[in-house]
Every structure is written in structure tokens, then in C-alpha cells.
Image 1 (cartoon, protein in one colour):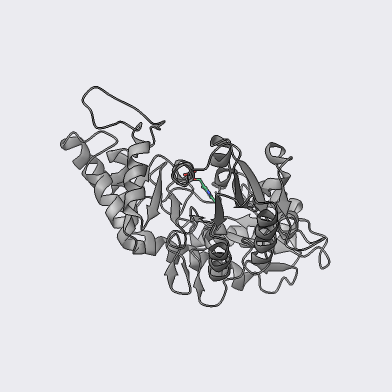
Image 2 (cartoon, helix red, strand yellow; image 1 turned 90 degrees about the horizontal axis):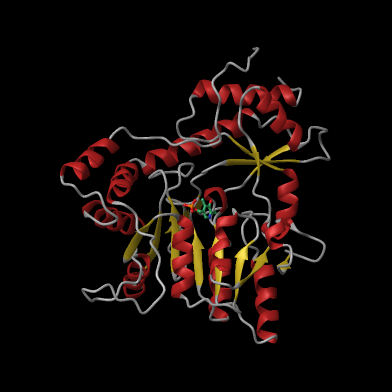
Length: 386
Ligand SMILES: *Cc1c(COP(=O)(O)O)cnc(C)c1O
């Protein structure tokens, strides 16, 4: 089948509205709750906390803001260090810089593409020896797949270092039955436009520590002391989510499970249809874990084919299909080129290898069967195996 560039563009992951968002928005307008406060905000927080079974949540303007608040609540300051997954979006680490602290990057392991327990333990042992333990460890669940939480949590416990779980891509995922976002002192979610559910932009901080969440609300509303004359004794931020956007979030949360099922079905179709191309491997779902499959991620084994990831991305682009390399590891970013990095093993940098070989395929829950077939045909054609 021949395609022309007049075919509608297929995006990696585009917003997928349920159609009921306007009900919540209209209600906010009718009651004039057009503010970074209001009944939708309270309800959205309770509903997200209820969904993952945590004590509470604070709705904020972005996932990045949620990470920043978590660092601030853990008293991360200038001169401190914070460990962070290396294979992730820059937003996982930027808030460390906002606090004037120093990020140290921990490599991935092969099973989950997420933080390597071996590299983490080595980094913590070195830190103890230098009497400079990190103030926190930020653990990312990439593309909806949980990191090896049991190992990572027990290592962090051993060294008494708190965890911030960056679950921006994994709302609805589970690790051995436990919901993503609930493993650390704090968990964070993102409702950016490309995420599994969206408020156009937004985020959530979750925790079982209700006193910390109260403090988060205070910091996120300009740290205003209880006085009529606008008194401030601490540095605060303007980070709260608006009542209108929280309404969109409530409507999206109602369809979250359906969205996850749709993304998982898309993953399964790719896997079935491309199974005969032996140079393509799929990101695994570890036993007793449940991934949201936010994005379908594959790797291309260069020993088995002369199609490079770059060529595949270009071939897809030629047919008006958006595909991307996996996140560029943060230790390779010019912004972080002076920061320390702990690879999985000596001479074995898993995140850098995944960056060289990995591709994310269009995975939006609104991708039609026809559109996915277009993607699959193009991949088959590129690998010469129609
Ligand atoms: C999207 C994302 C964030 C940031 O969320 P925003 O809401 O865009 O600020 C943080 N970490 C990861 C891993 C993400 O994918």
C-alpha cells in the first residue's frame, strides 16, 4: 500500500478527551469557581489519592512543580546532592537545580530500563564513605513500567535516604500489586498533554504524610502565613492547579483504566505484528508488574540488521508518522556534563546503550486501528519484510 504525505499526521501521544470534560468546566463557570482553588481541586485530589490508596494528594500546575515541592519538603538545599535516574526526561532533575543542589545520575538496568539497584547501592556506599549521603533519590518509572521497587526501596531504607517516585508516566501501573507512585515518601504524577490522562498541563504530589502535604499546599500558595495582611516568613511558589483544569482531570480520571487498556492493546498489536522481525525487541513487562505502556518502546539490534534507529525514524517521518529516540540520558546532556554518573557496571552503561538503540512508536490511546496499521506497514517495509 502506498501512502502520501497527505495522510493525516500520526503523533507519538496526543491528548484524548473523554467528551465529558465540558460538564465539569461548565459547572466551574456557572458557580464562578475560576481560581486555583475550589471543589474540583479538592475532589480531584481525593479521587487520585483514592485511586492509588494513599492518604492525600496536592494538585499542582505541573509534574515538575510536584517534584520541586517534594525536594523542598525534604529540605534539599544548596550544597546537597540528590540521586536521580539517568534515563528520563529533564524535568525529573531540573528541580534539583532549582534548589541549588547537585544531581548525581544512576544508570538503568536491562530488565525494566529503570534505575539499576547495583549502581544505586554502589553510589550510596561511596556517598557514605565520603560522609555525603544524598538528601533524596528520585526514581523514575519509564514509559509506564515500574522500576525494581522492592530492591530499590530496601537499599534506600538501609541508608535512610527518602525516595521521590517520579510516576509521571506510570499513573495506573502496578509493581507486585502495589500502585505506582506509592513507594516513596512522595510520589508525583503529570497531567501534561502527552501523558496518559491530561488536564492540558498539571501535576499531583501524593504522600501518606498528611502534615507534609499540608506544608506542600502552603508552599504552593506563596507560603502565605495565616494573617489578614499578607505576611510571609518562608519562600513560596505559585504552583496550585486551577479549578477548571482540575475539572478536566476529574473527567479524565474516570476513563484512566480504559486509556491504559487501549495503550496496552496498542503495544500488543505492535508486538504481534512485528514478532517476525528478529532484530526488533520490545521493552519488557516484568513478572507480577503491570505497565501502563504509556509509550511502546523497542530496541533495534544492530548485529542483526543494517536498519539504524535513525533510519527507521526518518522512514516513519517520510510517511508523516512521529517516532522518537528514547530519552537522551541526562549525563549526556550539556546541562549536566559536569555531574557524576554511576553506570550499571564498569564499561556497561545501559542507559546510553538504550539511547543508541531505542525508539518510541506512536502509542496514543486515540490511535485508530487504521493508523496503527500504517505505522506497522512502514516498519515492515523499512525492514524489508512485508
Ligand atoms: C512529563 C514528565 C515529567 C514532568 O511533568 P510536567 O507535568 O510536564 O512538568 C517528569 N518526569 C517524567 C519522567 C515525565 O515524563
